[in-house]
Amino acid sequence: MPNFFTDNSDILFHFEKVDLKDIVRIAEDDYEQSKFYDYAPVNYEDAMENYRKVLEVVGDIAGNFIDPRATDVDLEGAHYEDGNVIYAKGTRENLAQLSKADLMGMILPRKYGGLNFPTTVYMLATEIIARADASLMNLFGLQDIAEMICKYGTEEQRQEFIPKFTTGEYLGAMALTEPDAGSDLQAVKLTAYQNDEGKWFLRGVKRFITNGNANVHLVLARSEAGTKDGRGLSMFACHKDDTLIVRRIENKLGIHGSPTCELQFNDTPAQLVGSRKYGLIKYVFDLMFRARLGVSAQALGISQAAYEEALSYAKSREQFGRSIYNIPAVANMLIEMRVILESSRTLLYAACVSVDRKEKLDELIEKMKAEGKSVAEQTVKVKYLTKTANLLTPLTKYIVTEGANKITYDAIQIHGGTGYMKEFRVERFARDARITNIYEGTSQMQIVAAAGGVIGDILKDYFDGKEKTRYPGSLENLAGYLVEIRKIYYKSLKYILDRKDVKFQEVAAKDLVEIYGYLYIGYLLLDEAVINERKKFIANRYIINSLANAKKNAENIKNELFSDILHVDKILQ
Image (cartoon, rainbow, N blue to C red; front, side, top):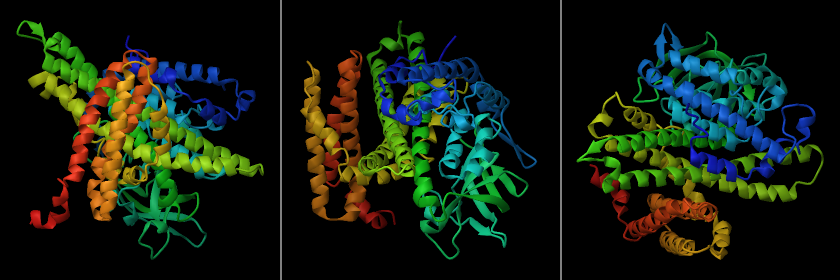
């Protein structure tokens, strides 16, 4: 009986080494919650044991219930009938099973029926679910909608919405995108207006809305008449009713079990969440932390599934009197897939911990302010954590989702012609992976989002500390390679800044962001190699490859191989 948590040695490694002490302490109110809830942990060890037990349940459901239904879900898909969206039979069964196991409110407070888990643990569960069925993750992963209402809504709104999310009775949707406002959310036109009694209503169209048939929608709308930028946007919550029409669902390449809808709001009653004018500049940016992590976890789950299929096929498929697993060219592909997979996982959970620390410190600051305590020290720390999270979340989504597309592509290649056929699962994995580096911000937008932090060298103090660390044995040589990569980064950065050309910075950003990513992931893997013998192989291949790639990136910048972008109009006439 497969268990997608306990049968994954790398997930277990990350779970056992992760340090969530400060995060859990704040989340559990210094473990005072155990006085009011008999299932709340009494200390850190108790909390980690609780997390482990729940992840084992998730792994069991994923491996033995969700995964066997995934092919049928893909074939049937969500479909549209008489204005209604109908989930595939397997999707309905999966959601019922997850609700029965009380897993639909993992990050929500116990007060409303949730489990009160950190984001990091939630993302572990998200990856496990996505390995079984990537499309189901899009429904399971929308717990963030409830979390936003919980964080910024009124107590009355929390009581109205949150308990039904935790039971699975409500599913959510994040209605941001419009036909003319994709990545540029400042261009949102859907209107929010008030009647004479001060009640809010929504009017307009949203497009490409994941799970747009949901019970509850979190909607970005223009509440300030006459505005055209992000300062005129607010966030609203609304129920699905007769005024909210699903006009169609998209016929997509992949993730068929997840309906993507076009919505029409016809004077739909809504409630303002938080303060006016903060919809984009605060709430959406906050929501993007988890959205980017969620899609990264989804991509990682797909990557794991594709790798497992490729490895199994390579061992069983014989050519020329031996399994193709023993053909060096194939073995090298499998090793490279494994390195991408494990380095991606390392980056993702480092980013998750960063976001957890930032968010929990935010919560602590608000609590301390309410108690009249000084928060000067915490405010300085949270500013740094915010900058770090603002860098790591787009960096993670860029690297992990691009890696997922490479892994699934190579999984098909290892299968040969059979991998192109629908009888084999890898073709579905490739289709499902393709969306991950598009939605919640394309890879190109992630580079833009990460570039400021990379140019500002946000992780300087971290890298300074790592350069002073003495690594044992052969790891010292790898540490030396990372020092060399850092020198390449500084030379490249100086070259870019010396140009004093903003446009040049923009076109050079991709190469510079990638160099910074090699450096950060390299040190994470190096630290893992100190405590795990097998990780030495992963660190060795990753860092050596990264040094070669960093030199290539630097040459691109120095030789301005992309400078023709500056003359795009002349080239593409």
